[in-house]
Length: 114
Ligand code: AMP
Image (cartoon, rainbow, N blue to C red; front, side, top):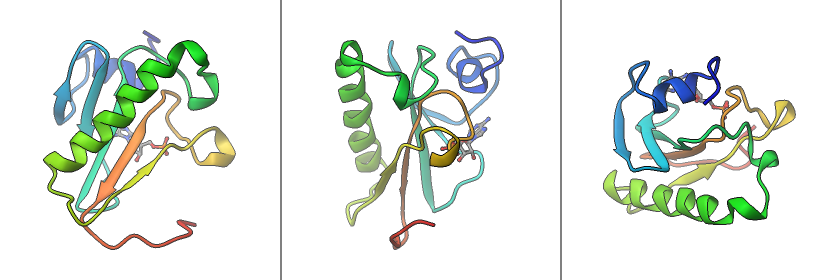
């Protein structure tokens, strides 16, 4: 846990969030400023600052995060499709330094995202 990390604080129950799922490794909560009708964030509870900081030992956890994204989309009823996004580093558009996977849906997505 990183004391100054907002997602660690959410994972630890220290600040509120609209949590829709959690187990010992993973938490899913609604994005504070949704970019679509459904916009959720899938995070590891353990602090990992970005996708670039993962290695082979994290393969199982990364698989779990992706699987949870699919389950989240199912729970949201996104049967026409959805987008998963992992922003990595400043040029990747990452603004919160704790690995998170966006699950976004409920409207038509465009590409490229900008
Ligand atoms: P990124 O730009 O990929 O790092 O995404 C960070 C996301 O976290 C943004 O979509 C923010 O709206 C979202 N966010 C920031 N603070 C919170 C919070 N306290 N609760 C829920 N979502 C948040």
